[in-house]
Length: 421
View 1 (cartoon, rainbow, N blue to C red):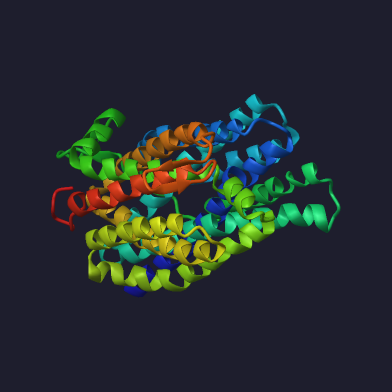
View 2: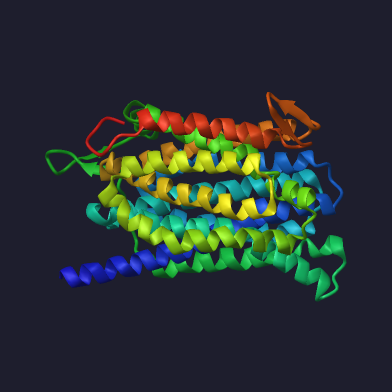
């Protein structure tokens, strides 16, 4: 029986890891890689890049917690199927749209799809993976997530450039190609969720002590409970993703214009850190449970902050690879350990609410960061103290300051299992 359980666990993790890789790859292609260059190709003002990203993050952030609680009630699988199915439709429609407000609406739908998918997928791990292997399982899932994040710009850029240089599609029209690739990835994600994932119990409904009645946990009560249990953790989640939001919308455009790179060259440059991270992440995952999840979070976030500042101070192509790899390693160590801590801090019936609450804090942080970046990106070359800042560089310096604050907070806010978070 134990062998059968281990086999079921392996099958589940294989399905979830594949699903996460396809889904995140598709979301990155659409919202981080394709949309900035598509907005430029159809001659919209650069501010729409920030607006589109903000709309996506707003929906994902606001609805993660409600969808997390909904998953507790109706089961995880329904949401894991629905999210990417919705995003398949938006990816197919986007290349035929040039009206910025319609594009904005499609990004809203994308955000709802992501909000439905991720809390349910994380919670499914907590539902089925034994506690002693949960840190390693979260690392596997997070590796797939980062695989998509790292390779999205490469694949999106290669597809767009191939459409232009190989298939001789006009330059502006070639920027539509990667949306169709993303639609195929979303459709594959939907298929995996539909046919490979188990149905899950409704975790938010529980028998009362008599065994005859049913006690239902309201969404508002569950979310308030998470705020009471882990306020410092939610603050830290907000800070980290506020920093991410400051740079995510304009990173590709900024690097392309600063270093005069093609989309393909930019994407291939990002593959170096992805390979390093992939080679080491499983080792890090196995060490997490022995080293201590809270300690891993603290060390990982500190590494992210230090490597990011090294990149800011040495803005060269080689440093994008070297320090980008270190940033990725810090994140791939910290994030799965962080989510494992959140999962362990909550009983099964409220696990979706806990994951959703952290996701909401992350989403709000990323949303505010992306909104602010649309303003900061317009600032011309300046100096911040002794640091010279190039044109459009203020959001990237602001991100560095936020990461330092997050690393300091982590030293005090994150505790080992059993301690109050």
